[in-house]
Image (cartoon, rainbow, N blue to C red):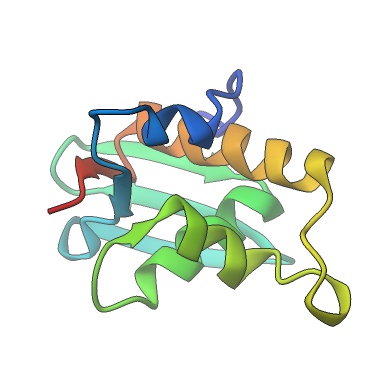
Length: 116
């Protein structure tokens, strides 16, 4: 089993001029999961890998699983970090989200695609 921790790659890099923003999606049909006390064990039927996810990684994965279509970084951030009274989320929270998301991408549990 492995956890979803990795160095962050700023989501803003997906907004470089000339590059379409990245969108994130979960291959839901390939995943089987169980939750205990906010943590999640995920089995990927395509690879045969099992991953033990932290509470933060489980929240990101659940948010993506609940979406009927891929989310770009801005919509994912708004869904998970709405901020108080419409304020922007804290930089450290955005950085933590970026780190978790990139860890899930490296594990193959979340796919990155260029937006159409």
